[in-house]
Length: 118
Image (tube, rainbow, N blue to C red; front, side, top):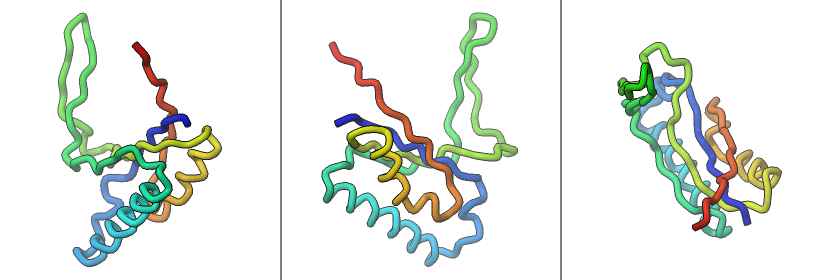
């Protein structure tokens, strides 16, 4: 089986209007989906990323530049990821269709992992 990374993209404000109880319900949906993947022996890992945006590195004039990110005007952020196994891209896409992230207006980027062997 191939391995795939599902990158969960969303707008920084997607969940800003939710109450604490509503957020618990949303989290429960993601947890139930993860548990289903585990039961089907497809889940390899995954986590929600912190909202603070991390650090972004690039090279400019031969020097590494490090900046906080994303900027407040960012239209989309990477909110988390799941790693799973699937037979191929169509199977990974079908599994991704079940993810609650799409229900809440998010976007999922499906990428096959190019396993590096020694």
